[in-house]
Length: 345
Image (cartoon, rainbow, N blue to C red; front, side, top):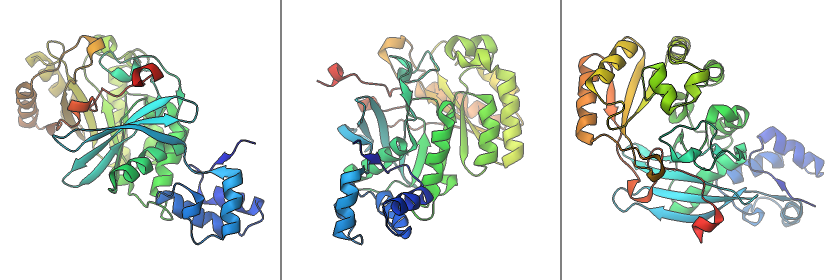
């Protein structure tokens, strides 16, 4: 009989599971707390009886993935993980160190449907959504491997989070649960390529969380050429949805703008960005494109990125140039991908 995976269940679901096993419901809360602290086996749960631990070991398992590989960037302490899923698929996640604490970039899907021209995650196509437990286990596994606590989350790895919204929402609520991690929603950021209907839903469900929108071009023609999602959700409609989000939540949206040399980094591109975004409750995060061999695209220089940031700031639009992390291990923005078995051998 296939064992039941418990990571990803809520406290109430675990209480019901314990009652079904003939145990007191409060054991479910104990289970939840142990798993959220990173317990990998029932034998670690010393406040449960030996008999119950043995019974759980026969019927259930905790985690959903294994760490197949960890690469470290000696320059900045970033670590990229290759996670193996139970069905043989793999995803990548990235642990990053900042002055304010440690952050984990989590994948939400195996592969991606969006087909953004500059991103490695879509290479090889879409396979499936990740469960809430598989997203959560990326954080817990990284903590076990690094020995460091993760207190910030960015859902910016492989996949489009809003294309897997139900599992994403469960994952965020599990992280926030006071019985477990008690992570503040303000420490969580979710990035989308611009799935408009879900932006409004996210505003209702998680008004304190942070939203980032991948923008990258400021005309429909230009954006559709590198981001096919724009054909379904055009630019002006997306910007209107972003304004509505800001009005409803009072929170500033981050617009991510990957600077591609010769494609979207000219003075006219910057002027168009200013015209489109001036007056919005937003922040522009400029990202010199990280090299992905298959795309044939090159990033703008950091000097050019800083010039653009200064021009936006002078126009009243807050802007920063993203700190480059993990570039030595292909762990930077846009570089995460599926890796087949033959690539790992």
